[in-house]
Length: 254
Image 1 (tube, helix red, strand yellow):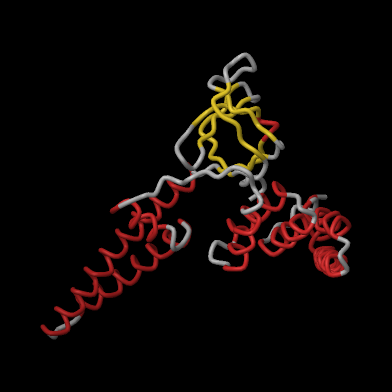
Image 2 (cartoon, one colour; image 1 turned 45 degrees about the horizontal axis):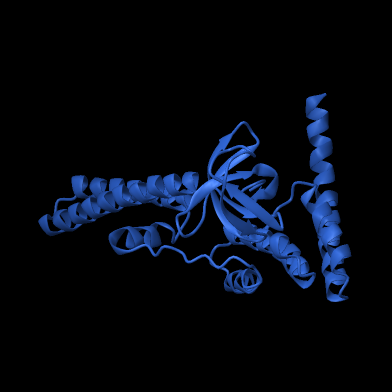
């Protein structure tokens, strides 16, 4: 029975993909006609099929931006950027959307060696660094085998140097992979969706307000409490507690 179901799914897959492509084109057509709300409905129907891409998120963000919906536009631009971090168009449009937000939060600049290392690590995702380390393992082994079976002294020196260099690069790539995974695990961003959000000193409604945030502001989730509250941190280092209903996690479904 399971085998038969699997075959049916395989047979239907091209048809389903064709439907999704057709829906995407329909959404684009509605967007180009200025029917942004209808375009969003079509795009979201694709998301309901558990199909995600930077292009789809980018188009949804553009549609929300045209409707002056700050939080959703920033939210989907951020999701698009996570899947395609080097896309300049996404970054530019995200910057335009962020200019619509009320909160002007000055980010604490990161200095020195830590900034330099993060820039290198974030050049690629941790999966790429991990694959690269495996490649260097094979290259190092090949060089070593060449060194072991070679009879020429000059070739031995050259092959040994190549093997050693590949081994060092393997260790470096593996280090970057672990560091990248650690940074990615700690990175838990969210967008404020409430028009006005009271950030409290403690995770309860009786607590004093620490400060106020507004829709579209990006925050980092540090921890949760009772599934109702989330401790957040903003770009200037301030922390506090917000009702989870007022935020939306960017990494959902990614």
